[in-house]
Image 1 (cartoon, protein in one colour):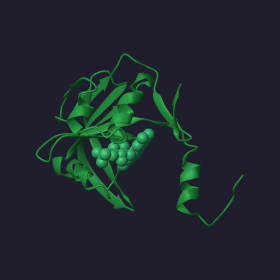
Image 2 (image 1 turned 45 degrees about the horizontal axis):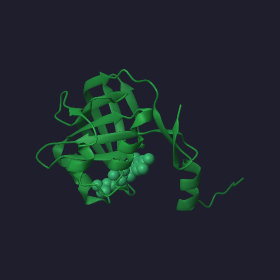
Image 3 (image 1 turned 90 degrees about the horizontal axis):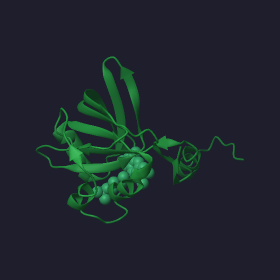
Length: 164
Ligand SMILES: Cc1cc2nc3c(=O)[nH]c(=O)nc-3n(C[C@H](O)[C@H](O)[C@H](O)COP(=O)(O)O)c2cc1C
């Protein structure tokens, strides 16, 4: 049990570990290059106009291509995508090409890679970004959608993968 009003980053992270988050791979492609990043900091903003947001670390310069390309696809992972999540989290040391080679990809509307067997895909144009702390929040207007056949999501909770 911890109750405090002196909030250290580690307390914040410990409290946030109690969140059960859906795991996504956020992808982009365009003049600044192709990239994918595992992310749980993503959610719905509005259904009209259809808008989602995702928060990516802006201290990693490799993430600047999401701004420069102006597009991203939020690919919501299924329970059997744990290895894919690890590949795009950078933990396995794979090159970008090797990461994308782990799955089948298509495009829908923006040219960002969309995962063929995702639970759902939100293919977006970036309409606004906000820089706050270590992260940049990307607001994306959904220009293309896909709803897959799978239904069991991959979750992340208490610093580990969980399946519903
Ligand atoms: C389960 C999980 C969730 C993550 N969520 C986020 C996130 O929401 N935003 C973010 O910027 N990085 C997040 N990361 C870290 C990025 O995936 C990681 O920093 C990035 O893929 C490193 O890529 P690089 O090796 O190409 O630089 C998460 C990692 C894991 C394992």
